[in-house]
Image 1: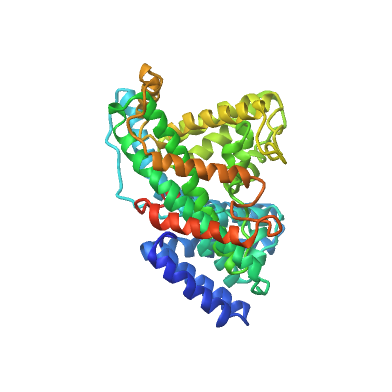
Image 2: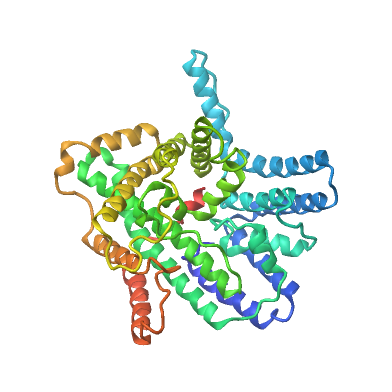
Length: 478
């Protein structure tokens, strides 16, 4: 079920009414409702793949119980390996089987011994990368004794399948989200209102910004040989805006919807395109995934400790794995490699934690140095996004080659003044609100009610009047 669909517009109020007016006096009844609603939400796409969520939930629930009952290292390791094998086994089969099969065949072909690749007609279950990491982190945290296992199977299943963030995150940790299923939720008006504002922000990002940019991105990338370098650069800029608005828009709707039901999810985006270096960008982009890889891959490998070689190795491992997580295509691996190359000098020079505050805090405009840093970081990010969007590495290389041609200095042939104006206004608002959790978080003392409501109605008007073609959220494919 899509957030930007009529079905969800009907589904959400029904679940909200039942949650607060029918099951509100009993936590287990509320959790049962959320679990049922989550399975309906996911099964709306393809009910057959609900079995994967159920199996993963059962495995990690009983692994957690087993870990809590033994202190024997060998048995604990065996239980953890069971969780890893089942979860990554599902993920590997459905997402990467064809990739490894074809890559294996291509490797033998290059060695002069061609073989036929075995390719299966596999459908990638929506959200498998997200809920797999969420439930797997629970087993790892219980194994490391960072969190206690739960005996409440209903709460655990609800935690794994919680519908607002089930298919595209944020990837929640058990220590944050799971305890919220144990405690009684009471309706908080201000919290619900802020949730509605964040839902409105997410719909605006998705429907008005991302879906309008998608029209031009799809055309330019599909016909890149027919366009000038300036048009291709504009297409890459549009894609950078599309993927940000699309994915952060989903996160906004997920977080806002959760707040309607009394839950708090972690922040997933913090205005990343205002970053002054790549390290800051990765602290602000897809925060739940970046921190997941940091805690469960980077730090166990030694993190930034050890000699220079170890630091370099760990940096490339974390970015290559992150790239591969996004999809079974070498373009994603190259995208990760490029970002590792961007990040490495900062880490080696110990500058990767330099920019941790809000840019130009307390000021209307950035200074010249900050503006240059933001512009440079954004430009480097755009170049990397080309590999992320391209279907093959050759296409990405040719796309870049055509960008940096003499036609780069010509007028773009494809674009929309309407979209450019919408994007410009959107980023101006983001800049003004960069110290907030989302762009509609207002201080009632400094922003009068008439202005706030004018902004709300203005956004609703833009959604109705300027909505692009309905597109699936980009990260559904990951």
